[in-house]
Image (cartoon, rainbow, N blue to C red; front, top):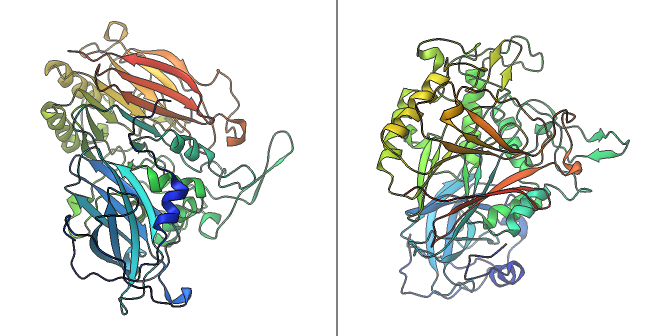
Length: 533
């Protein structure tokens, strides 16, 4: 694939140049851009005395206004970030961040703002001992490119569903290889469309495959049972960070993360009680979700302020240059109970996003000046996703007019048409295969909307399932799906049926090219979408 970065990162060279013992101490919170700092002499000390950074670094929530840098210490320590536009860290800036403490499981984050546009930024994270300022961790390095103002192509990837259905980190297979495949494409950022973990999916050390060979998982105590305690939910995120592919990816690709059900438990909704699942001692899903939400916010590189609950909301939006706005939805926190989903009038029971989130999304779409508006939905629109024999998990409920949760979607689609909001594309995951759907009002039961595309990607090192059935309420036309009908359920990653999506926006034509790719990075489907003027 054509590289759109003017400065290529030689990771080995970058790591070698940057692996400097962080012995110098600078007391100011932010160093002036005009100053260059010499590294103070290193303090020779035992590695056991140093804070350590066992799970690497990550960046996220990238926008025109800034980015979040995340990491975790192995003990109480102060987070420090040094960054520069030079990989040799000339003209370095230093930001003193918060203390990583036990109440956040020693995770911490720093917001970097007022960064120069369209620049490769090199950063290193250091944790400083709280009692001795000259005892620091060995730095861990990362990089990202800031959004362009104009004149550069944008390329990003998306997918969902990581380490589910019993398929964890298998060193013999090469770990979670799909993350390395995505990294090698050098995307500007990555949208994780939910199911970042499988808190309800314990791992066994060995799984016998259909051909009699053995899939071997790395296992941990927290991944040996369903997550119920805060420690166990946190342990699910730590597990994924044991994978070198994931850590390397996190250090180079900013993440925009949303959640779905498996961050808590399968198909959950507020107010649910797990009366029939004997794996759980804690039956109250609201309590499980509270712990799950805390772990998600602690371990994902999200702008998160513990003293401001509204800042911890999972639905949010990002401006990326002048060509792209991204709207991240939360389809878990505010939904009504999973039901047969056939109510004829809107009510609390038919809410999926909630009135508040829908109004927020309408305002954001209406005010957007970007050429393309990408809505990241953790669940697909027209695919039927069941919860048991009578209830439904997503928007769709089968063929026919808009009913139940579909009433909320119909209202949103009607708004987009009435306000003539152009170039809206939906990206999603959840169903563990890849697909392209074109929604055509001429073939729909509900017709009061503009045609649009929805693209489905995944899984990312999880079991492959599908394909699911489409309903006709909003007229989705199947353009592509990555699996034939009758595919055996829960295909392991070793069969190669893992899929992610890529989106390129051409800076000069403004054409959006969407690709769906397999584990090897090969394009299995591609389409060019010219912008509506």
